[in-house]
Image (cartoon, rainbow, N blue to C red; front, side, top):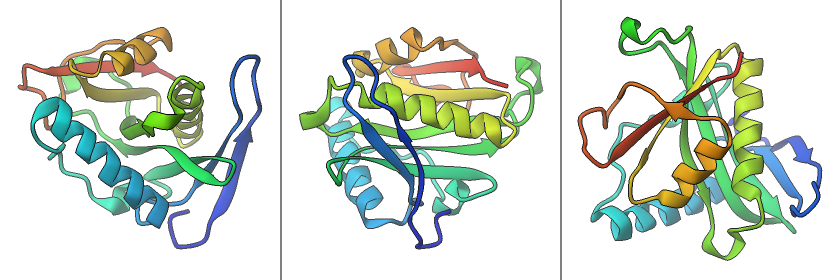
Length: 179
């Protein structure tokens, strides 16, 4: 939605061993999203020496071309993630168009290990597929081994480099067919 109105998209049900995360499509400009984006940027500074400088236009994360969600536990924002649709950069990749690129996946340090990243990723994959995406792609960095482990355990595989970090040696490019 992203237009200032908060709409409860879903409350993912509690699975065995996982705490419940309420996920809301709030839009990139929502104050909770802004706070979490600032936190993840600070984490990138620690891990990589600088913030993520890939081009992100907040409007890209608004329907029908995208979505940006925040996950809440006990009404507190603890996770976020979004996707934006686009055409593949290189038609030789074989990715069916359109693809959804996941951006800004993050869980606050105090809430890690509760399964929230997995719940957010499943939500992003499902909603991207509902909006016509046939592939979900993402880029992460080699200094985020826990993120790489999550994505691989969720079925993501190495794909040809794409986007802003295509030529960067620390980048890991992953994808999964969803539609």
